Image (cartoon, rainbow, N blue to C red; front, side, top):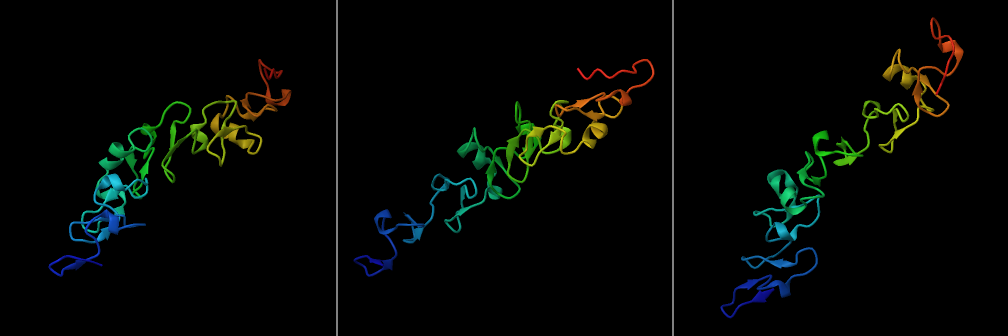
Length: 174
């Protein structure tokens, strides 16, 4: 403890008396984790609680994410962390889908996100991939138009003459 000439003892008078996980000296003479939001630098705990002087989740102050992590993690998730997205409208380009469990923009989170007939299937790595592992996906996604899984892994109208009839009895997979 630090004691004043009047005999009052406190944990600190300044930051030189504080260290580790409580590097700041509060006005009441206690070493604390933070005095303001600037001291809270992790996306999981971006807000300084005025009552506890500890870094907490962003649920009490969702706008802190857009201020603190503007370009990279501008949204407050339902779990209280600053994240890249909380819905698909926050994502675009090559990563148009929001993976809610991580708050990150990815290529896909389900088969329906994979609109390309050459890569019609969602993978566990949040990328669109070929239909080799689930041939039925083509028939489900493109019934009547591109129901077959081609040797190249994309959805096509036919892979053999047996898939053709009527005025187009020969398969031309190209």
